[in-house]
Each structure stands twice: as structure tokens, then as C-alpha cells.
Image (cartoon, rainbow, N blue to C red; front, side):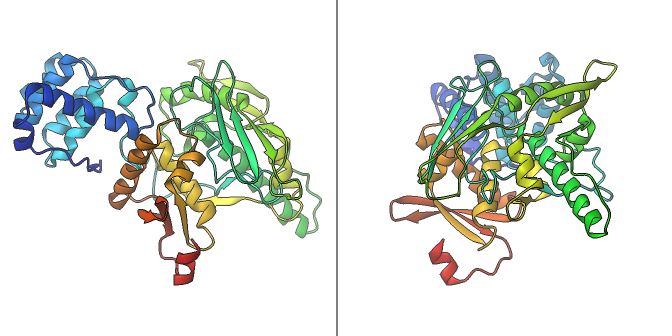
Length: 409
């Protein structure tokens, strides 16, 4: 596992702190990790966790971690690995696992690929992002919640120069999140691939049928496509993800009636779904999903050409929802010129994050710093001074960037 640099205090610096200061510092680090993970309701460390962390921080003795009394096997294995760590910053992983469950997701920008994935023979079909008819897509805003927990308000509102976009989740399910969206991407990829086969057959003089308006993926196909493991918990999460996707609706109000850039309508991320088969353990195996008309028309019957953008296969390894949004924003805005700048306040607005700007800025800074050690697919990130504050610069690696491109960004 690649270490994430948290710039923690040295053992000597930590030793100079009072008991109250040590506890406060450890709580601050845990809260910082929570912000990175997009947790909008962080929970404090308890006294026992603080005591263990203080002892380990000072001496790094295995006995200080009280492994014999740690009943959680995942936590116990993590503590063993940390006891052998060379870099002090890996103490941050211990803090993450000592915190409540809300803090236990991967702190790294990129997670490791599944162990069962055979890199030599691994093939992932091209990943596409769907258009909102014509040449319109949602890659410049987040069409999903950045939080892994249910948002109480269940609504994200984007007020853009030419449109107001509202993402609304169901009262019971809440909004679809960034990982639920993987199923949507699989649906669009499947439709695009089928349509490509249709056009090839048509050019050969054959008379193929247009793609069906529904598709029947197996959960194994979706998990392999999204580069996830095939553990039981992955299957258990699928049904909740389908419920959230079906309940999440996108409403667009066009503010410029002369423009054709954005449609004025409301539509779901996926249509009706039906479980076709289950495993012996009663987990979903195969489902049938109706493809929404706006997706189908954008790929099968576009007015010009399909408005789809190919994503890098490593998109699925991006562990942080905010980092996924940043990659999508970079792909949309810097994919042609190779460089794009957005003011941090604009990035905050378009992310849909409910974090206060100051906390959002810290979370974004962590992603930028992490990307220096563990880069996002295709793009480099920088936070630079700007006329009205700061800006996020997204630059495509190995692209030929001219001085004019930099000024235009």
C-alpha cells in the first residue's frame, strides 16, 4: 500500500505536547482524514482509541496496540502492519482504523486493483460518459453525491450561467453516490458498444436490429467492469445502488432559450429495474435495467454524432468521490486543449459538496498533494494564485501546451 503523506508531527514534537494537546491533535488528524473522505458528520475518537494511539505514537511497540484485546480481525491486521512501518506518516492509517466506521474508507487517492484481476489478460471495455442529448453532458458538474452517507436534504442544486441543474434523490433512498454511478457507466458503455457493432454490420450491408432499450448485466460483469472485488459485501451493496440510481432524477432549467446547449426536462439516471436471478445466498445475480430515453437517444439516434467521452480505465481505482469529480471535470474541460483552470469557489460549487468552503479547500489540497505521489489518471493537478483567490489547474500529461493555451485556460 502506498503511504499517504499527512505531514504528522515527529515523535519528539508529539512528546512535547500536554495530554490534552495530544488528544486534541489526534482528534484533529482524525477529523482531517474524515474531510478527505467526504464524511460530513465526523465522529470523535473515544478514550480507549486515544490512549492506544498515544502509546503507539511514542514508542511504536506492538504491545502498546493491545492486539490480544482487538476483536476486529481487519483492525488487528492493520495494526500489525503499522507496527512495522518505517514512515511516521503511516500512523495516519492507524488513526483511520481507530476512528468509527465512517472513517474507515481508503484514504489514498487511488486504491489498489482487485487481487483477482489478472493484469496480463485484463480487458476493460471503453468507459463512456453519457450525453444530455446533442453535445451536452454532465461532466462539468457532479451528477451524484460526494458523500458515501445519505444526504439529509437529498438535493444538489447547480446554478450555472446558462442553466439551473437540480439533482434530486428519493425520500427513502437519498441520492446516488459516485460509486453507484459505476453501474450507470456500465449501462452506457454496453449501449455504445452494441451500437458500434450495429454500425459495423450496417456498413457490411447486413440488416441488424437496433440495440434493445434494456440490458441484462450480471453483477459479476458490473463488478469486473468497475474493477472491484467479488466479495459478498459487493453484491449486497448492488441493490441499494440500483434503488438510488432509479430514484435520482436530474432536472434542467434552461436560462438561455436561444441556446441549444442544455435541454429543459427531468429524467432519471436509470429506468425500471427487475431482478432476474439470485445466487444461492439470495444475492442479486442478474438484473434487467431499462435504459432512460435521454441516454438511448443520445447514443442510438443522435442529431450529429454520439456525444460520449472515453474515460481512463483507472477511473474506477480512484477511491475518493471528490477526486472522481475532479478527474471528470479535467476530462471534460482539458481533454482537447490539454489544460484548464477553474477557480476554487467554482470547483466547490460544481462539486455539489455540502462542506463549508474552508473544509472543502483543505480536502481539495489533500487530493492535489496526494496526486504528486499517486497521480490521477492522465492529469496533473496544481492549486495556483489567481486574481480573485486561487484556482485549480488541470493539465494533461504529455500534452503539448503552448503559452497561448495557458493564458486561455
